[in-house]
Length: 473
Image (cartoon, rainbow, N blue to C red; front, side):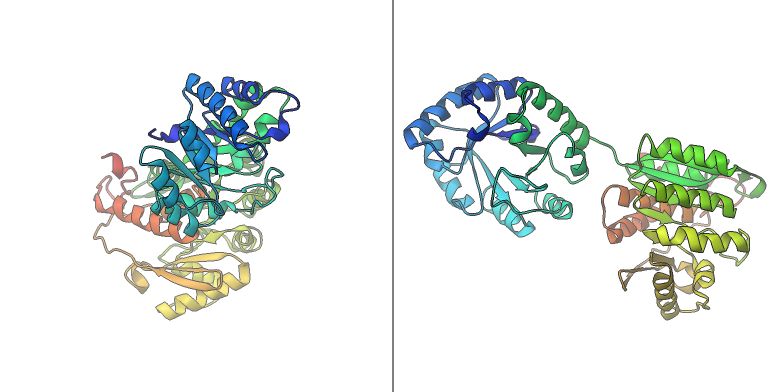
């Protein structure tokens, strides 16, 4: 039987413990009525004759609903009653031996708790991997906890489908969003319910919503009427990077490629209303902050981010232009340092901004490393120090977790670079929103910037914008 990954969306594992006097076939029928897409018969107490009879009955039921049916562990029973396949654990028969006995057309699932186990299972012929326990569970005494990061790493390491198992229910399945799994395997979430059909139906809906959920990111910045920078650039960047973008506007500007002719700042009260509306409805997976010119607005942002325990915060500390001119007042700079930087996952200063934050003069790569360490130690946040062409060939330095790594820049002779700082920080936020590591988010953001510059978009009479949606051209 050819395995379709869609069949793994809601994978039900039977457990005699929850029958409460009912027949197993009747209980499984209820779950199938509720939308279960895959059934595994897990039986540890019956003798072979009773096991075989029960397996044959369930096989016919699953055929009726056109749902794959596999046996847990017992390869001989699976062969005897012609099940669709077998699921084995790490202490059961090795996947290669199972494949040798079952032949090429049967489904083989393997439980794994590490990347190494999953890769080996795939190499030996597994069709899917079951990973768990992802949450505490009472169904298996020997279940080992598997973190979200390990689950995600397993999904990225293998090309076959991965499902999560262990303690999963309607209340926590959303926490598995973005991991890369194609479905969930459950026992008590369905079979311990008073209304099995309804429990299966609701869990299937919750699982589908979780796995199909689009990652979200919020930009808190000013508006650029020409669309090259600010929230317009952020929204285009986030969308181009596969993230649903939201915005809270700190100021309206009248500007184009030749300059700014007017600024109208919003009140702290109105900014607070925008942020409350966002966080109480569509909670962002990442937040990017751009230019915020007043101390009152910075305090408003900081208070809201703390209130809602915002995560993956990327702060573009727009304080000083690359020319050295200050863009915000001294009081606002101090509040930014005290209130916002300590909340950041990463900040993205240019050289002049890093000089202000570190109190150092930066003239070389070694100076960049030293300044980034000072900022990291002082504000307890990771630092992506943008080299720019003043120091090196646009090589950026990421200082994180007490270590640093360089990200080489690609020299592109394009004078139209308006909004590159906004674009880089919002691209990093997009990567973090999708669950990428900080290193990967920075790398992908740098690649995205290069792609947007290489198109050589030429709009306006001055310093023109990037081609944010270059992949659509």
